[in-house]
Length: 120
Length: 120
Image (cartoon, rainbow over all chains, first blue to last red; front, side, top):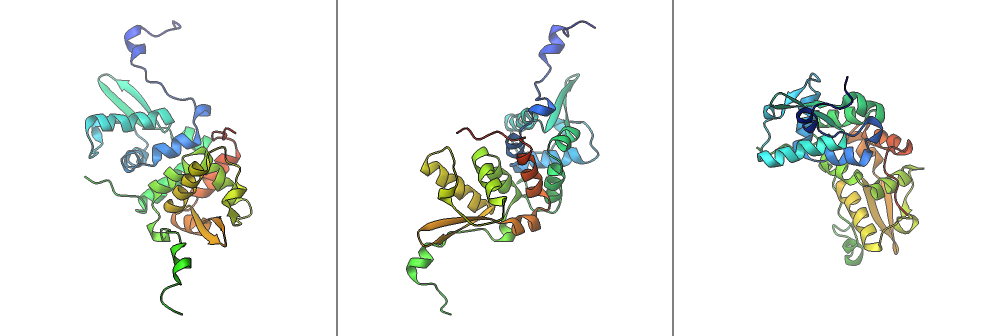
């Protein structure tokens, strides 16, 4: 009930744009990469929260962290700490409300193999 | 009926990806820019061919040329020379066939002001 969360926890809260701050260009940029598209496609299956370590991406740890940050800062995913794990979830409701049909069109194109396979 | 077009004309043919070569990531990248989105939105009105000079983009001539090239090379627009003018047309049929719903979702989001206005 206190107005601020205790320091340690607050310091681990990651910044996210609110629904109304999500911008089309930033979402398109975030999706315009085969590794990030693969992450989004995986998150879309079952709409569950997944740890970063679950994704088998053929890039270094720091590059992977960068990709997840781009997805979070654009508003495509939500990242929260649960203990020592950083968990990721697709912001499907926010994206569908903001850009109706966009995520579905992108996911459908990905499923039909019209994007570049991730080299691995 | 000759296999090659006369030199001068052929030399002015610009390279375009065929429909099956259009890749999702490249289209998303091409659309992930406010100037390029403005060009695409304008071309979508009436589906007509427009000269580059028609677009009132707040960037230098060389930057503008770069943006049109990104749109052409990704498969979003077709550029053809008609006399001295370079004419641009949206490849709507190709995009709709390849990524159903994607262009419509992007255009709708642009119309609803969910993208960044082009500074002028």
